[in-house]
Length: 196
Image (cartoon, rainbow, N blue to C red):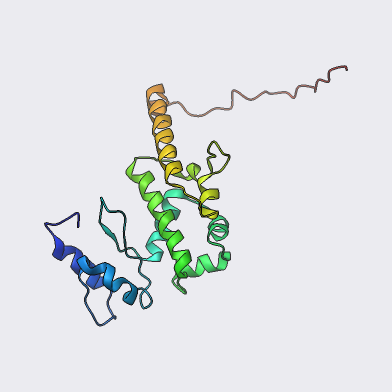
C-alpha cells in the first residue's frame, strides 16, 4: 500500500463502506475478497497499477459524479458510451439501480481518466473528451470502441497543459476587460460570386 503509516485508516474506511455484509475485510487481501463482496455491494475496488498500488473504493455513484463534475458530458453522451438508455443513467445517479459489471468497469475507467486530468491541473477537461488524435479518433471514440486509450490521454494532458501555459503567458488570464462585440460587423456584406 502507498500509505504504509496508516493502514488502519484504510481498513476502517472499507469496513464502514461495507456495512451490512456482516464481515470486515483487510485491505491487503482485497484481491481475495473482492469477488465475494462486489455482487453484494455496488463497490468498485481495484488496484490502479503495480507501481501505485492504492485501492479505489469509490461507489458507482461517486465515479459518475466525478465524471460529470470533471468532464461535464451530457447524459445522452454517457448513455451512448455505456450503451444504455438515458433512463438507466438517471437510475444509477438516483441509486435506484446499479450498473452491470462491464458498465461499471467503463465508468471506473472514465472516472480515473477524469482524475488524471484533475491531477494534471487541467481546468477545462470537458473539451478533451472529443479532441481528435492523428487518426481522427477522440478519447470518447476510443473508449466506445474499447481500444487502447492511455497514450491518447497522455497526449491530451500534455497539449492541455501547453495551451493553459500559453494562455497564462498571454496575459489574458489577468485581464479585467469585459468581453465586447466590437469585432462583429454592423451591416451584412453582399455575397460575392466569381465569374467562371
